[in-house]
Image (cartoon, rainbow, N blue to C red; front, side, top):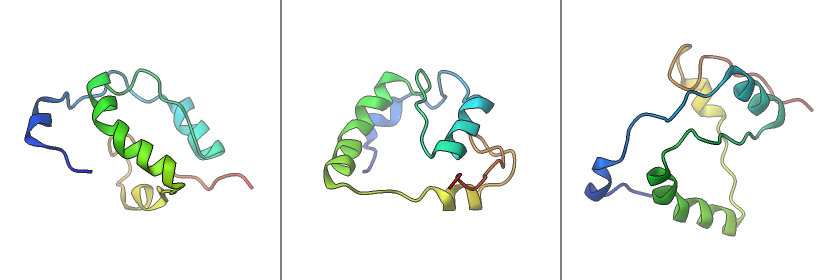
Length: 85
């Protein structure tokens, strides 16, 4: 997915911070619903790519994002933990 120049006016800040409990739930369960984080404009921009991914049954390994992130980086906080078996 590429963002067009039309999307340059999209908000760049989340509506709220991701909580420590949500981060813990993600690393425990492998998934978390983050209601109220993304502005609706971003949801609409991302919708086609997400729908394609779901339709094709694709998966995404997010591990490299956490591996490469510096502790304290926005949204990561250096808290990567292995998922429970």
